[in-house]
Amino acid sequence: MVVQITYMARSLLEAARRQADEDPVTGLKSRRYFETRIVREIESARRRGRALTIAMVDLDNFREINKRFRWTSADRALQKFAQIARSRVREEDWVARWGGEEFLLVMPGADLKTGCAVAERIHTEVEQCSVESIDRGPIKFTVSIGVARLTGKTRGAFELIDKAAKALGEAKSSGKNRIVAARDEGDDDDEGDDACECIPA
Image 1 (cartoon, rainbow, N blue to C red):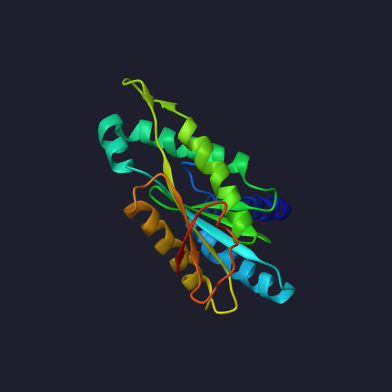
Image 2 (image 1 turned 90 degrees about the vertical axis):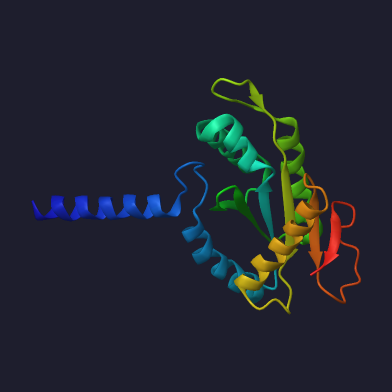
């Protein structure tokens, strides 16, 4: 009996942990999971001398989608994005829902050019897709993406996320439905130029 109770308790704890690590709407990783793991990813990248790039993704005009098609159809758009993101990232990449219609894509070992290429695959497929609303036909939507890489000057997770968020803000303010990469001041290489626009971080 004691063994059974112990086993059940462990199973419940493991189920609770999985639920906390997973976003219930999209099935992607949760913000809680992201905030814990990104610290380890940065530490690992620096210890091993590997690149690390992240991308912040925002579904364009999501409030209008929610208002016009109602929340059930808006959730379908979120789920469709999650499906596309999972299918278009590399094997070592992972995606988390940051909040609302914002997501973070983490790409261990990816430089800025590779990160932009992964982001472009997601961007292109989202632009071509649609989801069926409950009663008003297909919903078309697009995404804006900000890409940022870890450098020796990046002071931890908060600054890396902030760089991606600023690049995303530039993508949104310059017309949406595009990818913008943050480049650190004084960085005169051209990596990423073929894949997306670059702005100083």
